[in-house]
Amino acid sequence: MKTIAIKTEFIKLDALLKFSGLCETGGEAKNAVQDGLVKYNGEVCTLRGKKVRPGDRVEFDGAVIEVTGA
Image 1 (cartoon, rainbow, N blue to C red):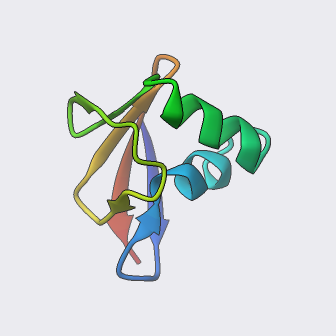
Image 2: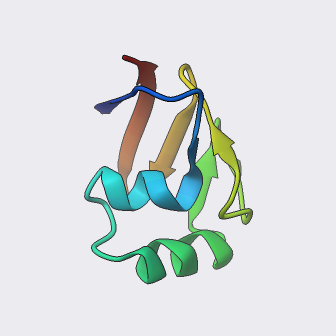
Image 3: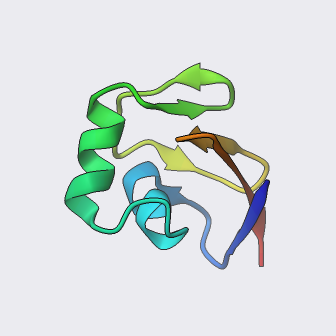
């Protein structure tokens, strides 16, 4: 599990994938989300603009990201 701390109220799902290093580009992150390859709090999410807040969990390509506040 990887923990990512954010200083803002939320981060968009596709931006989180890029920020965490799980996707190299924003386009790759966008495609991963739209193709249904990403889980948000245990459920598949296809909304790339989904707001991820501290306490949320994101899963992609075998990796789990937990978002925390700063």
